Image 1 (tube, one colour):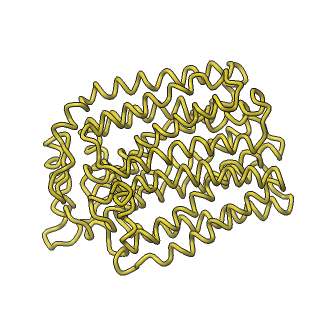
Image 2 (spheres, helix red, strand yellow):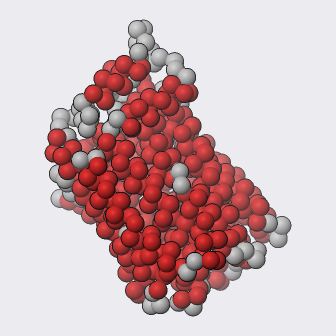
Image 3 (spheres, helix red, strand yellow):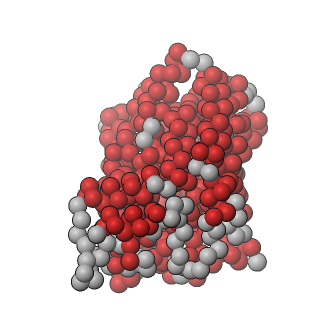
Length: 451
């Protein structure tokens, strides 16, 4: 019965098309994570150069994610998703051609990574906002769980593993070419999304329009970019569970993303005497942990203590990373990454469902973009600091700090937002169409701000 619950979203045609394209695209992204690292190393790069390329992608994401959220609430999400995939195809295809002809340089990778980051800034809010339009509320947890299952398997496991083998057997250029083939196939599939159902203006296509800023004539009211942005910010700031989760995420990104993305390849090389294949399989093991936990979460109902489970999973899951810098055994490091992936998967499935069920539909794109912006605001800083920091500070100390700070901040967020009280006051087993709020004044404030 639990397995059937996880598969219910596949009964809807639009979801089947969307998830098929997404699966292929994120498999390509997983290949890119490894291909990019070893393409930088192939060009003579070290941690500093790898930091620069990784930072370029995060800068593109952070700089444009707010615009992406507003776009997701204003224009058809279907068109945004297709446009992003087409851009990904063009960028990776160009890098592949340059690599194959021997003309690729580090600045090409940095520019390409920046454009891919911009594309992600428009994709994620649009994807989050389109799911409630094609699926009933009861299927959203399963849909987020399915994505949470596929993303680790394909992006953190299969994709990196295949790319690692391709790099070792051929060259990084061949791995990049495989990435471009994935984006081509995903782009073709996305064009089968139904136009008649999904090309209507987002605000006019969902329930909850009484909060959606309609003019007296029944049409969506025209508002400025900054008005729309302010509305999303006001709602986020006035919603404690949302605000404090984002504060925790922002700090965890600062301490975790840079070390994981930039330093683990060198941990593999220097502490384990491994190569690209070992790095790829370690990412695969982390992905298996996330996938299995996501599937398990999707197979059951949302836990009654959903906020506590979410924050506790994220906080406890970072503890094993504290010892990564001193691990010299493959299986011990693999176990640490498996736990990190599993606990992260549980939290992300619950988090995505909370956004789609507790945030008013007309604000979902903007709040999702604020989620990415606030969560990732310090990602460029983390990427940029990791390489130089490793040159002056022992790697074991960097991972120790990351593994200990995040659980402490998780406890602070849980208490500051009174999450254990909020989840009891706002159960998610309410009637369909009701959007609970952790602050009863939030919805009235949102409605007034649109008048």
